Image (cartoon, rainbow, N blue to C red; front, side, top):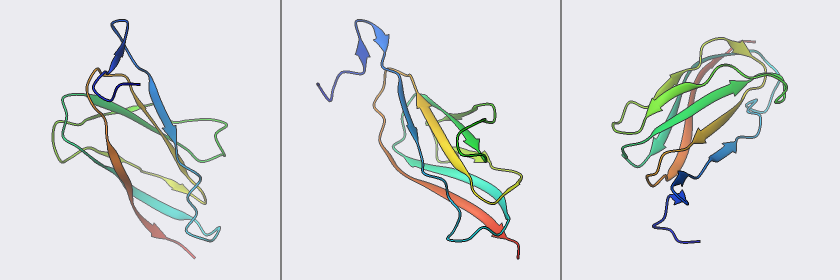
Length: 107
């Protein structure tokens, strides 16, 4: 593995990662507002989607360009638990530091 190589025989390497379900330590309903990625600024685009039913079904992917600081997904809707999946297939470097979640919790 070479950290300077981002393609395999000319084809981008398909990278995907899933978060564990987020529930804030309880099963109260949460109003999700934003999911924001903390990444390096690169030329590529990351795809992000969410699931509220333990990975059974997913929302459509949102395209998040990594070329600026505003790479966020409107994480609209309510859920008791939510997880995210990110996919990246560009031929540029990718370093994700965190996924920041903004939400309000209902009782």
